[in-house]
Amino acid sequence: MKIVCIGGGPGGLYFAISMKRRDPAHEITVIDRDPVGSTYGWGVAYWDDLLDILYRNDPDSARAVRAGSVVWREQAIHVRDQTAYFGGYGFSTGRAALLDVLSRRARDLGVDVRHGREVDNLCGFDDTDLIVVSDGANSRVRQLGNHYFDTSVTLGENRYIWLGTDKVFTRFTFAFEHTPAGWIWFHAYPSIAEKISTCIVECQPQTWHALGFDSLENPESLRVLENIFARLLDGHSLITKTRGALARWSRFPEVTNKTWYHDNVVLLGDAAHTTHFTIGSGTRLAIADAVALAQNLYEHAEVADALENYDAQRRATLRPIQAAARTSMTWFEHADRYLDRDAVQFAYAMAARHGQQMPWQYQQHLLTQVPAVRKIRHAADSGRRWWRAVRRGELAIAPPSLGVRVSSWR
Ligand SMILES: Cc1cc2nc3c(=O)[nH]c(=O)nc-3n(C[C@H](O)[C@H](O)[C@H](O)COP(=O)(O)OP(=O)(O)OC[C@H]3O[C@@H](n4cnc5c(N)ncnc54)[C@H](O)[C@@H]3O)c2cc1C
Image 1 (cartoon, helix red, strand yellow):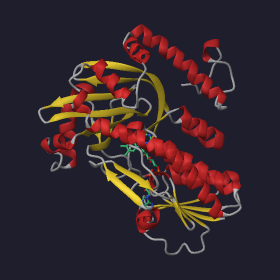
Image 2 (cartoon, helix red, strand yellow):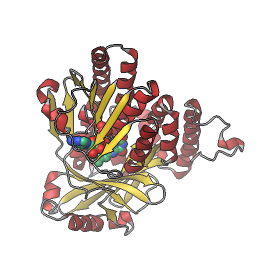
Image 3 (cartoon, protein in one colour):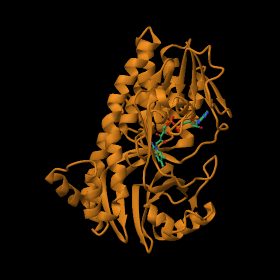
Image 4 (cartoon, protein in one colour):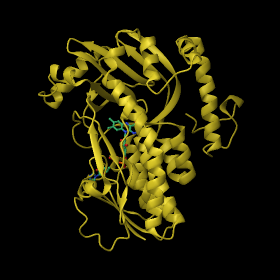
């Protein structure tokens, strides 16, 4: 098949990889508007479920993604000068590093990855069997076919800016600070081991206006934020530039489409659906779309049947996830309602935004605040992490506790 992917983010690149893995004869071109090595955004947080998908589909790139990732253990929630903790663990990697791995792997498999070309219409693709629209939340190509896809885009109320910092966060950290203009907070997690962390700053619109962010230039905005968060950043800097342009304040666009395909044009990743960053799932979902689309094309002789099946499967999967993401986004839009509580109670309310909690979970949350209990949880989490790694084929050896050296085990 002759295939073009418009947009070389994680979704477009991983689709190309997944197709080539199933049939190296496919002729695939990925076109991205940005120059090589340039991207927006910082770290991407993810969990075991993404590694499971990657290892099942393409162990080579899975190993490289894992090698470039950092493990974070537990979450810390700072409210004023108090701190509460949550258990659990996850992984994170730099978005730029992730795209480097995927581009390299796609090229190794024979995909033609082209940079520096912006596609804003479908002229010139007449001889293409399949056009994959993977150009992100503000997809230009999707906008051309809005009436086919029945697209809806709803902007979140809060303002956010996706920054980096040279403060090394080893935990997934939320920090809420009160200013005379209202509450403002950041979500931070490691991106590049022991060097750079992601720091997404968020606040309500009235706070954003009152702090002057609607008129301040980018460097001034950063200085204001560094002052507000000076204590939690330990005097470290915020960084606005990744490898591309300066970060900008935005409102999160929730994108839904009633159908994800028309003729031989199919939506994938953020072009098809977005999920608020407070559930940290967008990259995993784009990659899962990529695998599902490739698998459907592999299983069906006719492209039309494959697209119909992909559309039905993935839209059904996304419905409850988008609902959960919407709830999470709305919770943060009204976070001030809960901020009169102490950090432990506030952190519990934050966890409960995902749904009803059982009474034992509250007791567990209280216990998690005890350092000795957290130590035990870390040990249990390490065991769980090891077991998941063995199960997906990442490790084929005995656990570290048995004294076997596991070099890639971090
Ligand atoms: C603040 C923030 C934090 C996030 N944190 C996480 C997280 O921790 N974990 C997680 O899983 N997800 C996170 N996400 C979501 C994640 O970034 C996206 O869901 C994911 O990148 C979607 O991948 P994609 O390939 O569909 O689109 P994108 O990554 O947006 O890629 C689209 C590509 O298309 C290119 N492009 C755009 N227009 C054109 C055009 N006209 N012509 C050619 N090329 C074009 C762009 O240059 C880009 O490379 C976060 C999102 C935000 C906003």
